[in-house]
Length: 306
Image (tube, rainbow, N blue to C red; front, side, top):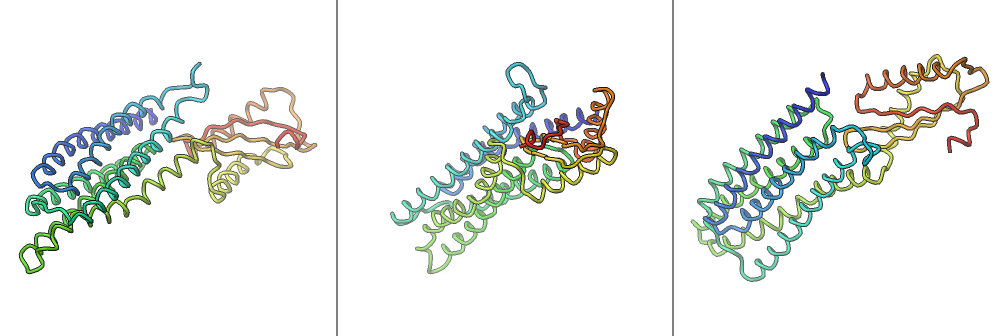
């Protein structure tokens, strides 16, 4: 029941993000035409990316809830980091293109825009983006969903972008009222260069984390140590020499392949006793972290764990 609630809450948040992203696309492109601003056009393009990605995210959110089948023997959760990786690559490409085109515009003498109208857009977009980012982060805090987490980051980036546009347009508007009005055409392209460069670390971070999941790289040593320590506590009644735990994270699932190297004191009468140990360990681990999925093997020869 709890899992179903989380799925419905996740889908509700992603659907909300989808419709708001669509509204922002229309608003941003409208203001980009009115102001002739490259910065707002860049923001509009970013919103369009967010909108398209939201459609894909909703589809993936439904897929990852499916159990494994004949086509995907380990379920659909690997699609989640793949989508996040694709999303980050699109954002990186957009940022690089924006910086390159802005450098070209700067060398050509800058680009003037309607800064008064642009300030109105800046206020609306900044408040809207930060609000939806905060809402998704707060409401999705208890969910085990990288999709909601990345979507919240996407809105935060858009909020920073809009706030920067607002600040720059206020500066450009002020310059036009002074003797330094000849500098105002440079504000728009300089802003785009700064924004495009400053935004790059976030999608690169998402790209690195998603790629690690796609290639099944183990979590950081500190996280692995905590998981292994927690698992060993579930073996209080099992005599063993060593435990080898291999860990990988794919989307919302944390997969553990565990080899328990038993000692000479370990003995069982039936296979059912092994199953009872497995069920007990898995229940305790999933109570600690519901994302955990486990396979446990009992062996005597340590070489079989290599």
